Length: 352
Image 1 (cartoon, helix red, strand yellow):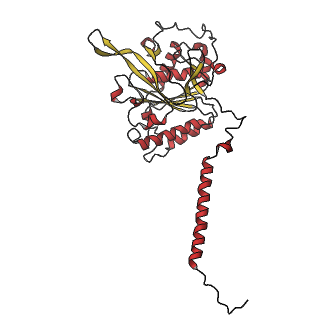
Image 2 (spheres, one colour; image 1 turned 180 degrees about the horizontal axis):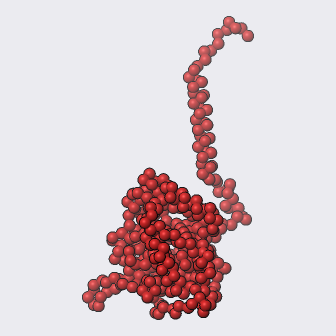
């Protein structure tokens, strides 16, 4: 090689460009790796269309009988659900009845059957333990559920947070230490939770979550973490209606505050007072002891017809279908016998 031959000058800019390309390539690889870590896969990779890979049927917490007598999904398992009602209509009582039914396997309102009974955590933010005792005992008396007292003893877990701060999100939308400790305790317990009930949502909402959609969405994301516990429980929380919905005729817009709460849940049920006409005057009067329970949002199954309920004040406001003219006589633990009924787990069809 002739050392006297002139060599082309080295371009410093070319070296910079090559380094920039290499850095961009590394950045792109990291971005793709992040997507993969999040779980992005093609349908072919997960094999959803493979002949032997049939989709799992929808898991249900509660079912309802169709006209053909077969059980159909009513409330999904492993999802976030919300109950909306004005104050004093039986919202907390409804949740107590749901808790007792899922814990015992007895049908809710004699209409909605429990698909898979099991452990329930009932968390009330406005009631102390004495009031929770009265509500649970009164519900067991009124159903009556004494034949299933052993299952209720084992499966129903109660927590009063009356007078205690229990927010799940902070002012920046992050998880609070309370939530992290709450979640860790549920996970470490080893209990195969079927259902977690939170009442009312206002005790668990973070700052501005009722009036700011972004804050409410972040709260929904945090609460959804509870559905990712090992047993994939359903989470049901209660919330108040807005002022315009107090008079009945409610729909998906009935929840107080941010619409992101309704948008974020997969199931919403409303309790509303029955409105009667007074004589022939045309004046509308809200019933003192009748409410309508209706599902106004459901993402995974058919919307069932509404159910009118009567509040039985002789049993603490226990809610029972209006068709039951008189309360059932309450048996004692010694005299009651376990009823034998159909098992919806054996009959449930994936017919939604």
